[in-house]
Image (cartoon, rainbow, N blue to C red; front, side):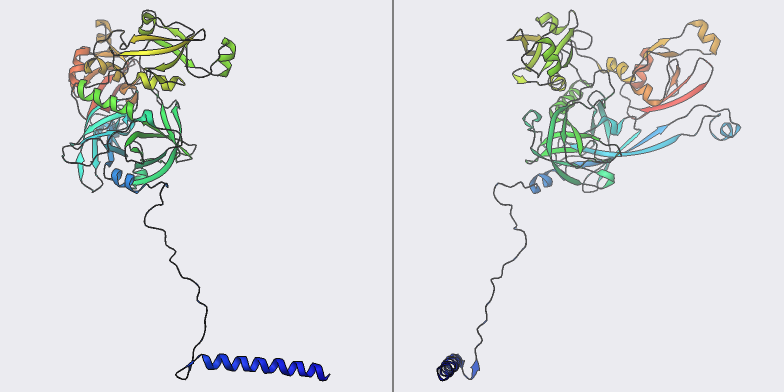
Length: 477
């Protein structure tokens, strides 16, 4: 016990001495100095500059939003004449009241002197087109030309020194590349969304035109109603596409959006400015995508390309030496994997241009120089007047004298072979007899061309059906 007690006393004594010494050494001017551990402090905001190697959209967004405009349209539609006395009293001898529809979309300024690229479906049949810039200045726009086959349209406003987006090259766009979609979804001006290119050469069968070109750039950048006609840009701020459509069961963005490649758009713009209408080149082949099934059936060693299943005899490809069963794999050394990519590449040419077509035949690559042609099978420039017939989407044939007498008409042109076009879009049915355009009588197709040539704005079509029903229709040029 004495030994244990001694150890305890010694320990306590040592502790007291140590504490006393510590206190004495830390006294300064009668104040006890406390020793406190301080944890290192640092700010937790995000750095001002993106780390090297990461993606930064700020510059591309700043270079784009001032060049993307808000487009608002007015479309006036006239109805069928009614026998209702109420309409007869109030609305011009029974014609139903005009209905005005409003629409909106986006557009891209492509030059400082006021040229604007947008979708055809944004301005189709519009009587008035208003363009509002990012700084809220508004202008009435002139529609210089449209191309339903690519769903593109060119507008012009009277202004100078505008900010514009420079063209990129859609052939250089890579799957996985970051992109920005700039537009006015749901009338929310200057909205920017980001995503990646998820596919190229995509055909979604949205353009119901006989000679439609669908080779969309597919992205997962959020696009909604109102984005149509807006810009798809790369991280350099270059224009690589025109946002056009979404894949959705609800009408709103569901993960996929589609843009017309800028190389197609650039050619459309150039044609409209130079010729007033698009000069479409044709290779003269009937083609389908090559896939594993066809390759297996035909004993082929490849599964990519455009399989030639038919040719127009005397057409461009036939005359150059291309034959049924060939597989088109490249145009001017640019590889084509499927039909949309082939159509996109051919769509960048004009009739009369030469294109080197590479085909796979019996395991060997062969090259053919093909002189591309227009839809008439020659290399002549298609005039705006001739193209007008295509835009209307119908043949217009004079009525026989006995038919005119039966209907009590002095003159008229009957709509035959109605297809997609402005007449069908306005609601006109096959067999309708056009008697007046903008209240001027028409007796021949020449009268129609004269009435519509250089027309800018709404067009009023008057006429009668064979059963005697009088009707009025309107559309925009």
